[in-house]
Image (cartoon, rainbow, N blue to C red; front, side, top):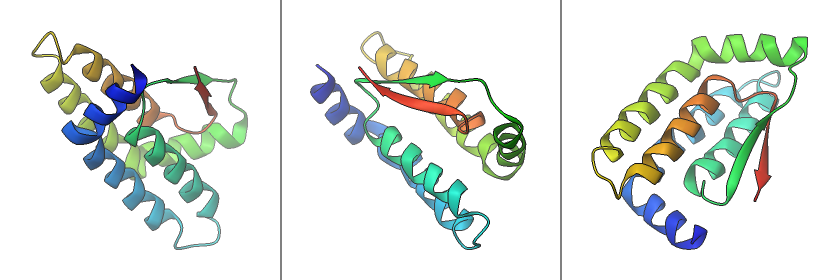
Length: 122
């Protein structure tokens, strides 16, 4: 089921938010200090492309993760979260689209706090 869900997800809207994650990853990777943030953005872009069969676990954040998350919200997190929420609301207009909308809402939360989160393969 996750293969079919991922295929439909990719074709119907997972590609555009993944491009946004990739774009922000490229922007962060311009400087040496931003490379770890850029690498995390690339990981989240791959999750955005194929989210079915994966879950996100939030561990306790240290001071470094908290600081980077605060900077991230200001620099790129709000835009990604809003895009995911709008696409999720669009998907939830139909009964068939509800699972896809829920994946978008999961990604919206992840868009606000990507650092300190771990991707778990189910």
